[in-house]
Image (cartoon, rainbow, N blue to C red):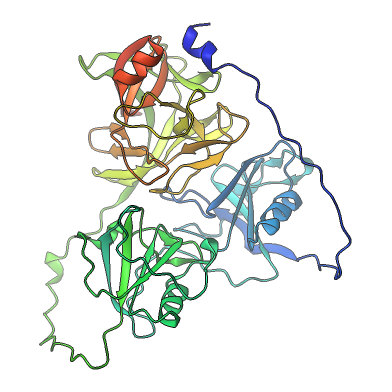
Length: 452
């Protein structure tokens, strides 16, 4: 085994936890879990997961186990999928909708007599008839006197609003209304939401930052899938005008443009094909991503019989960012092609001057535009940070480029590298990574080749 791979070898230790039971003063009543609107829902529609919290895969999964895990973390929805995966949430995101029961017919890994969803089919249970919301999301125009929603670029090192709501709002219960109510109770005239789960308060009607189209603030609220709550480093703000400040006369309303001048909404298409691997310097084809892996790391070769099939959904002929690429046959049991924190890393940061690296491999869903999620993946059976929605895809040319998001929200230029002529890695500084390990075959790039 080459030195790079042997440097990754080592025992993976599983921590054991002893459970100490104590008789409670009051007996907790067990919750009632029932199928949500028939039970079986589509999942991953247009790259959006139905439930936000991914607990990973289990070799002994049953609906009851998933329900118990979600209940322990305070969630009101539990979903089982692909026979072994458990998801939790409080709202159903995107355009995922109830579908035929036949889509959710895979046998549970922990019970031969039970079914646990299917491929892109999630069987959802709701706790105690919780009144959950369903996407897709849109911007809430106004609430409780707070209006004029606008999107502003924010930074963890220089926040636009530094105030906090009167009481903490759990991330998985975040809604626009709760954030505004909390800021109003704390005496602020402005409220801002970010990352789908964060609430900030202030008093500036025009924040001192760079404004942007509202589509940058396109992350649904974790507590209400029907509304947006900002984005990754993008703050969706609302402002309540002071009662003693006259508002400008908006003047006559602008006439609506003629129907013929309104651009049509682009049609979306699901693409299926293979991923070609080329050298950046010479544009030489060196292989295609394989069905098999090297200890969970995606491989590439010129073998025409071993090419993995992938799919993605995008507007026809356009570029889509923060996209997920689905492996038709899965990657060692994981549905998405993603990036995984390297074994030798001390953390998941990459960037200029930093030798740390990322595996290309199989992962579960992570929130688009979010910082890395921790969980099992095709390389690590124990928790490790990964991201699935890391790809920018030009559906017209097939060009695929990665974008890793560091834990602090920064977005370093992300390069793909070849190792030993058959293994794919990511790096924020290929020269530093090569100097640390050696055996670098140069930077590579991915290109999607649709099936004929």
